[in-house]
Amino acid sequence: MSERMYARFLLFMNAVDDDLLEEALAVPKRKAILHWKALTAAVACLCVVLGILLWQGRSPASPESGVTAADLAGYGYALPLPTDAREVLYDLLPSPSEIPIAQVRFGTGGHAVTLRAWRTEAPQEIFDEEIWTDQMDWSDGGTALSLRSNAQTAQVSWYADETQWSVRS
Amino acid sequence: MCRAIARRILWDERDIEECVNDTWLQTWNAIPPQRPAYLGGFVGRITRNLALNRLDYNRAQKRESTLAETFGELDNSLPAPGDMVTDEVTFREFLNRFLRRQREEYRRYFLRRYWYGMSVQEIARECGVGEEKVKSALFRTRNKLRQAMEEEGIYV
Image (tube, rainbow over all chains, first blue to last red; front, side, top):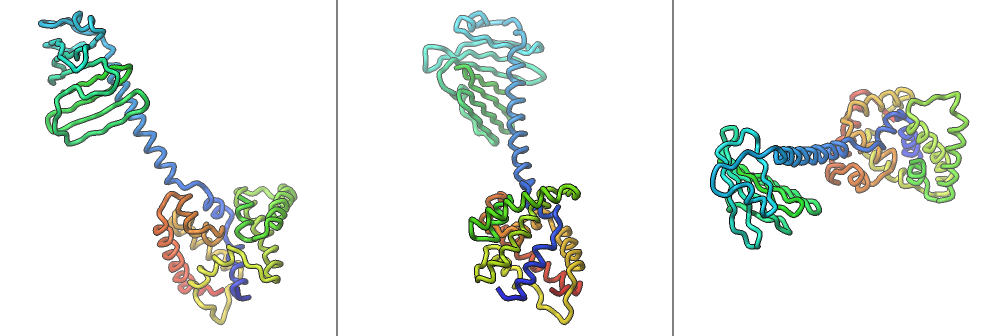
């Protein structure tokens, strides 16, 4: 390094204000933004799951025909319904295992809804396949969540406590 | 932080250790009466000055440092000196004004590269961006600095 360049070097090194030098070493904001994005996504997923679980925990309406809620209870199922549910129809569907899939169909808020549950040891698809335009999957340990939708149908599925739940409207 | 600053200016571990220890001593002696608003920058400056003094001594023995070598990259982009050389106070005001006008992200890359002697890879990794982005930002900022110096008649 020449004498002139060295003089410039020293001039530059001593010219910058302390706050700028401190700022330069600080953790970039970008990382913080990414962190908040991840946190927001996690909170959104949690809200969806909690909403579904709260909805699931409400009192059931009386069955109107066919298979009854008591029949489902015989297999260990309790399929709670929203208080405004109408035209409720319970059913038991065959499955690959000895335990059948429990189903309840009802109307609420102007929509026809089908809720299914199946006691199984691993997450399963318990509705017929559809062509989805949007889908998202999340899983962690023994819990799994999936969201599916297209122009006509939306489906939310979750697996927890060795039971696969799925609701489609 | 102090050790990292010293390491980029000096190469000998004993010099670095001595520099960091002297930093604490000088900081202890300086506060009070001084009450720095930016402690990190204040302490970093003490380390840098101590290391530069040591570098001056080492330089006489033909020992270069990482930071001095890195500075060559910036130096090559600066305008050639004119007949008049800008005084230290004016240059300091100009440089800080220039840096504050830049995007925070670009300013961070620029200072990390030429004041802390970090490699492009290190900057990219720590800031979570690609190396090409850092290189491009450094190139643009060097060009802007040269242009600003020419426009304001700053020669060093």
